[in-house]
Image 1 (cartoon, rainbow, N blue to C red):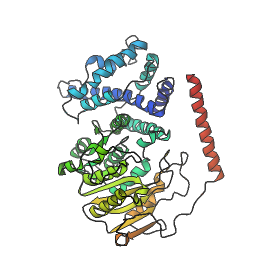
Image 2 (image 1 turned 30 degrees about the horizontal axis):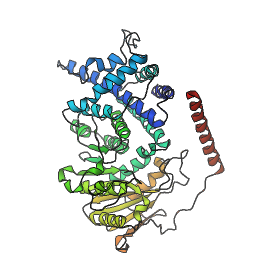
Image 3 (image 1 turned 60 degrees about the horizontal axis):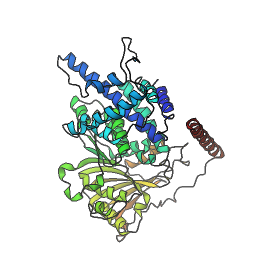
Image 4 (image 1 turned 180 degrees about the vertical axis):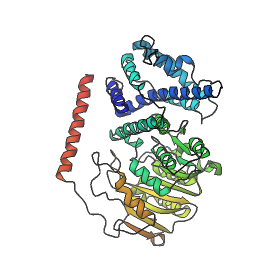
Length: 484
């Protein structure tokens, strides 16, 4: 049922001239999903208070609750369309009253870690792009079919929402920067091994994939106490995200995974001066895939001891600084970081090797990231002791990765298993840092076992991909014809 509801929502959004990409569909679905979720949360809290004989103060005033403007119900439990807003009345209410009211919560909130503050931030960052009140009415009716009350329902919804984020990433443009393949994230988490009690941080949160998967990993660690569950909800996961759309998606993604008031800040992480970082600001675990290829302004570069315009290199400095002594990290970065000869790259490799134990480097094949031709590596390091030995693993799934052949958990199983003992194999080897050139600190991935054999796709695999791309093109053309 949920899957069909999501499909119906997308079909309705495709009728909107202002919604032309998967990014738009995900953004518009997100704010409506959030308000539907908030309505369920408020009802649960009100019911709980009633059972305890206590009064409950609603977050939203009556006219702005989902049950009032979006889905007023009759005695039969169905939407009463005589009372529900529609057409221009609905559009005008949303644009002129609802959004300004919700945005005002930023000023009303007691602090940035409250759900009130998140409400204000979300509705100050996005705009309603559904300009037909009749389309909006149709979408709201489908959203209202969704339920967030049980863990099973939340679990199913979180999977559907993740699928939307994945589609957004596959759509290309700037959607890909919000999506890191979940099998890769899960493998990184299995190597870093976060524990209950750790403070876990992603300073380039995107859609919060790392934080959501870390939450799932910790929930599955066995029987958790009430104290453990409270800690996971309130003082374990922390993130920062610069872009408005990604911020909104990150909040919604974490909520659907079961974290009610995510500790995600909407800010440019790189504007923070590293000289101001204190021990209380540091984290036990850092998991991240920072954006690369961007260029930061000179005034932002002043916040870092190693000056460079490359965003990924600034983020890596930030992560090293933000780790506490003994803290662990798994960070995705361009593979050119290992061998670039410019002064910033050399200085950064020197800093990493001297201040951290870079124990593992995972070399990812092309096609790991959909829509991005850049090859990447994952750096695994611990803060506080210099690097003596690095274990390299060259990931080779045995096929060309692409949109129709994405990375999966099985592809990474050998890496996770061999990494436990830093074992040598045809795909893995150890490097003593004493053998590394001390003038360049070059860490180029050179497999001494001869490297991987180049494998070409079978004719059938090529035909399958062509068919999939043809079908996608036909769908796009059909949507264009609908809009014309």
